[in-house]
Image 1 (cartoon, rainbow, N blue to C red):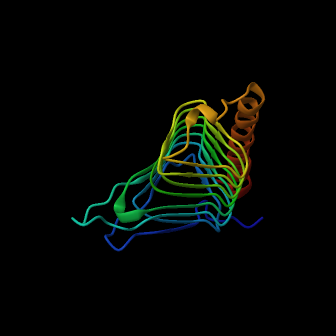
Image 2 (cartoon, rainbow, N blue to C red; image 1 turned 120 degrees about the vertical axis):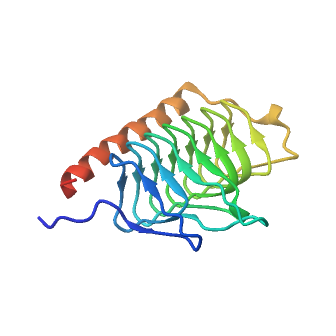
Length: 193
C-alpha cells in the first residue's frame, strides 16, 4: 500500500497565515485549506472541500475560520468569508455535501446542514437542522429550529412559522456525526497516520 500524506492541499494566504490542523483530524488529499483556518480534534474534511480564509477587512485584519471538534465537512463543501469576517463551526456539527457556508457566519454545535444548502451572514443555534437545498441568509436561527428542504429563511421570516427539530431529525444528525467520526479513524488507519 502506498502511504499518502494525511492532509489535502494546505497553503498560506497572501498574508502568510497557514492552517492549523489538530493531528487527530483527517483531511482528504483532494481538499484545499488556505490561510487562517483552525481545525480541531477528530474533524473529518471530505474530498474536494475548500476552506479558504484569505480576505481581509478595510483595516487589513482577518478573523479565522474555525472547525470545531468532532465535526465533519463533507465532499465539495465550500467555506469562505467576506472581508475577513469570522466563520465558526461548532463541535459535533455536520456540513453535508456541496453546502456553502459564507461568512460572516456562526454555526453552533450539534447542527446539521443539508446537501447544497447555503448559509450567509447568519447565526445557526445549537442543535438546529437545515435540510437539503435550503438557504439561511441574514438572520439568527435560535437553537433547536428545523428548516425544511428548499426553504429560505431570512431577516423577514416569522420564526413562529419555523418548526422545531424532532427527535428523529436529532437522531439522524447524531448518526451522521458518529459515521464521520468512524471515517476519521478508518482513513487515518488506511493512510498509516
